[in-house]
Image (cartoon, rainbow, N blue to C red; front, side, top):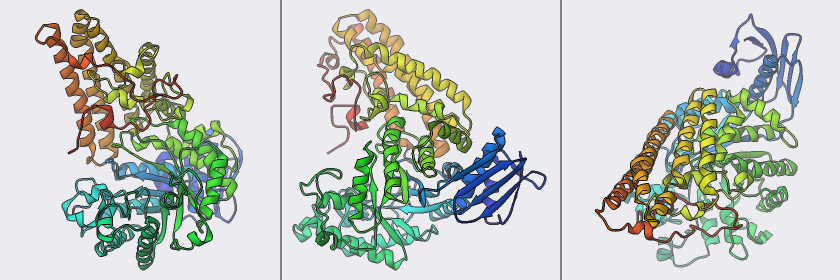
Length: 636
């Protein structure tokens, strides 16, 4: 397809040229005429009698409009599309601190899709994964971004009108930085900076200088969430006990002095103030908060609070908490979530169930800035390529006053990414298995614990007894077939995504109940079955796990910096080694070299008590170190 985009497009031209291959057109004077005009008001697209028109207000609106026009041309659908942007800022925050640091190739291809979606914000969550020249151990061997890399990302995003906002930490979540000897003097507790200590603020100023020199935006996210150890470690020893609300206020005031020095406009997570002012000392979302005028007046001014919430499916709850945030004295920014954390596969069901009411609440309450977090807790086993489905949902909410039309969303996903929405949605069934509620609202991560759990120890085997012994392997077998078909439909790095999950589903179809089979045969004294399992089943699973490891590594190396992969290599290596041990132990028993296998005589208990009881596979918040052993994995 050839397009002749005309009008005052000089500022848009770099972005147009960059997106030509994504939309399948080339800019040519001999092409279809597309008249472009910049004006306040709604985004406007028209395709009629072989000509196109686009009217836009902000650059990001133009690139969404361009994708809408190409969509009409390709579908031979004459007519007009008008959309009213609901948010002034809408985008994502990529976690680059949980081992997987997205490389420039991945970030750029994501930015291209975001431009076509009409998303204008990117935050990179970097606890210690950016360069501070004065601190060589800050981000050491963690794949930290150089200043030059951040500038390149910022330049690339700017051609589409996408704002890159640094997202750092200036209080908590700094365990990886504070573990080094050279940083110990800055530590209050394991992951919290020592407040009211002069060198701490020298360090924070170095942070601000590093990130402010690397991007053009003057906005910055200064973090400060979940700093529960504030004032309770070395601070307590040095200063005695003080109310943590007062410590927090004094620390924030000093940090805000530094943001002012560098001309920065800060925002921060709000949860610590909720936690510190909760009347019953509860969690972020519990109980009543003491936001009286007297208390609020003590909180330093000049910072916007970010309300993060990806846990609720009730619009009224979100609206109530938006009101609570406004009591803090500034207009809140809302942060939802695309559930990519705590498992090996994304949880799209829960993402949809919680995002729709959240963004409807934001629109109802007039919140103008939103973004989707994509965390990577416990080693970032789920690749951030899988966030694209959720980003499309955020985008469509951003240009729709009410509910999003699912069929339209699927069509937009095809246009903006070139991939199938339905194929990507299949990934959610790695965890939404038989025995799990619809949309997996309890965050079962069965694909994770079934892969990592030990064949001889089987900490989750009790949950798999009964009907699941048959239904679970069949579920994964059928899913592997669907993943194979999806892989054939995909292209580029998307093909690598489906290749990984094809192999993972194949592993789980064989490994899910392997421990039960081994334990049951041993307890029945069935040495013939034990030999078959040792000589046939376990070697098969071993080969499938290794194929999955290689597919996972290929995807990681294509989309992330190599640092951090060593952790997953260790995890896969542990499974492979323990499978070999299981094979050896069974053969030793069958051939009479040992009299008993104590591991298989131990009673299998439920990993956790279930509510309701019919939900057999549910392992909410279960991380690797608890999945693989009942012993001590790594501690003094």
